[in-house]
Length: 338
Image (cartoon, rainbow, N blue to C red; front, side, top):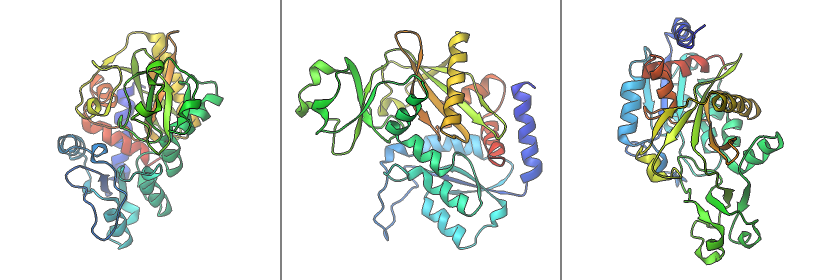
């Protein structure tokens, strides 16, 4: 069955079975996610939250046309409190989870874990996979055992810097951040031997990682109980060699479909294997760079990739005539059968 028809059929079946449900959207935004006066929360940097324009696009153009009664939460604790206070029929709640508040490595696992405990249906991966894919060092070492291509990667702190293996070109990035937060520019090892000049290293562990110089690609994935199917890989087009946090936040990059079918097929097969090994559920994304031998190298994995219109998910849907709302409907349709 053609992809477009399969997706439309799945969405239609979803509405047949869940038309009486309440859609609960949980997301963190820079303007609406507030700090609580009662608690000293370890709140994430606002740069990781949706901007007002980003969330307006997602909520107004993507989510609002969904044919379900909907309500929104911008703080995870507000949602949890209302559930515990009995404000919802738990058998009729569907959670679209985009929550990411906090600083610890397990921060994206709060809502999945809570929902699993109360048997509430939610989008995205479970608490285990969310936390596993959050720690770049752990999943890099795990996937390397399965003979997948990944950059040489080491844990790094100020005490261990002088003992690091020399890598001609490298980058430094946090072990457990997303959205390009804390990612350095490419660095020459020879010019960075003086530990006093390493401004990216703080008291927390960072990653010291080989820089892969080739083009960067994304492979968006959908995961159902029966199968894992990748959409078409897309090349990221940017003036910057590395997508830093400013480039990411300003959407100063574009996407391009690739014509190299052999490379596309290789990346799809690897992305499917990664999703299987890391137990990713519902939807996700695997990012690659191409090394000097023309081989795709895994550089990042996301269990909660952004779903703005400037995304590889939307570009794939738009290409085959599916709407922005169809993207959110399809994720929901797959989530009810996890």
